[in-house]
Length: 94
Image (tube, rainbow, N blue to C red; front, side):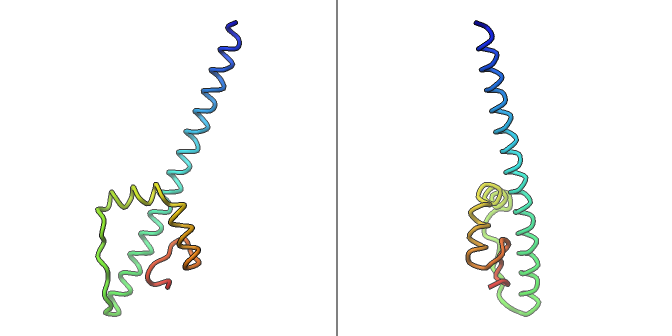
């Protein structure tokens, strides 16, 4: 009777490993999205400021922005592509 228990434990551990790996990939892609988008936003802010345009201040505390971007990056990327044709939409891409 011990064999089925070991098999079930092995399956559960494999499932946990796959989920952990998927979580690491998701967070890694989210971090890449965050830093890519923030770099493009900074470049856009700088370009608009150089032209004398109004530049919106950053609204959220940077760690909170990081948390939002890492958590919701698929939604942000899809919305940006849908509206502006690029996953890293900025006011300069409109």
